[in-house]
Amino acid sequence: VTGIDRARKVVMTSTGETPYDKLLIATGSTPFIIPLPGHDLEGVLSYRDLDDTQAMIDAATPGAKAVVIGGGLLGLEAAAGMALRGMNVTVVHLPGHLMERQLDEAAGYLLRRELKSRGINILCSSNSSEIMGENGRVKALKLDDGTELPCDILVMAVGIRPNLALAKE
Image (cartoon, rainbow, N blue to C red; front, side):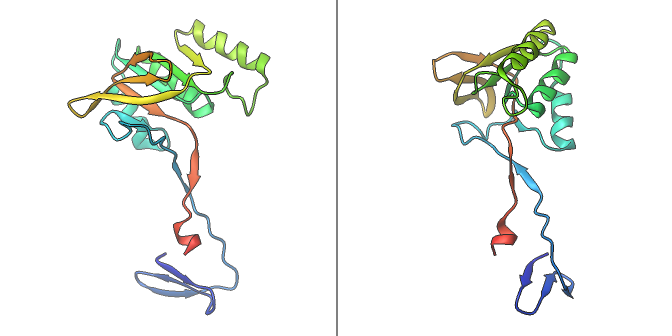
């Protein structure tokens, strides 16, 4: 769809126009990328589709280091998958406990304990300040407190935003 003429009730595409009686706009979404310095370095990924999953699998060599920003469902899924492939994984989460939208603090603590038992390092109440790189590739995540978390891959799993451009137009 390249345009919508609401007055004429027509949807325009590259191959012509299609009239409509009622129009539902299913915008889809894109992953939100925190605009930190270094967010565009090679090795910084979002987690939204099969290409993102394949990139994580390709990077998942035993002993490699991964940092996941986001302790929600997708971030924890990414962390678990990379840990199962032998990576050293650290999850950085701004709120005080994991999956804060779905779990209360006690349940978040139990989840954190279980993930730690699987070798996943969890840092809650931690804020990212900069993605550091070398030769155009990610090498570490720097936190507000100055801590640097070395990584070969950094996955941002901090939410999605609807694709609103066409709808706004």
